[in-house]
Image (tube, rainbow, N blue to C red; front, side, top):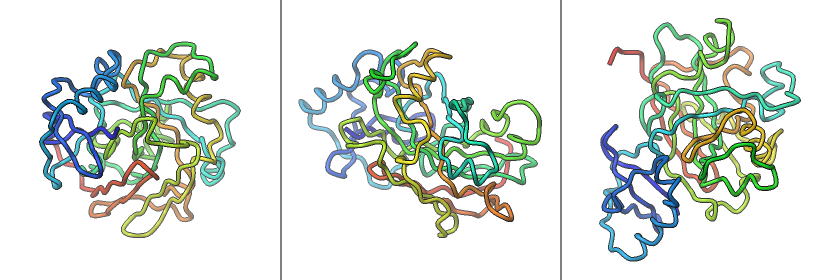
Length: 283
């Protein structure tokens, strides 16, 4: 299945994509959130879809994040050798883990707001894993059983705040609009091999990133098992698996985003997204 959430920000309804058409599943009565995944929601939703006539959703409707706000977004840093090299970082012996604020989540085509006083806002196309059931001290051999599905994610980053302001990377990762997700969540049966997916990103029409998940340093089962040693992963939680080479930080000279820029990005089987950059303004 391909799950969507659509409509006004903060008031999204649930839906599903069937044969490239969008249908409204709001009569199912549940959001796609922690409780949904925890209570076998995917199988229950499949039964609901099979037994009901669903109204179509307008094609031009706004899409929100496919998952209602999760308890956490866990990110894996430097998980592609080429990205580690371009940023002059040593490929890590163990996964680098940092957190991204859930208040950063927006829809796939929502605008990205450059933070106040930012001069180094950057892009990162990533494969995001959605956890399907509670995971703690998971064995690597069993780890894929904990995956509900996959999404496209732009791990937007402010490099000065991330790398030059002391402390952890989180400072440059959690701003409002810095986690565009979607357009849809694809369940595991939709993706034949998550370790062989092309992912790409363009800025103002120019290709900046063109990589493949085959080049992970740490694969998905290892990342899930490893992360679950340090925190309990709850249903609906997101693990973002890192980005390939081609970020602005890795260019010589560095290249960063400005208001008016346009990002386009996508992953095989997970659709594409388009995000306009806007200047900071107080909400």
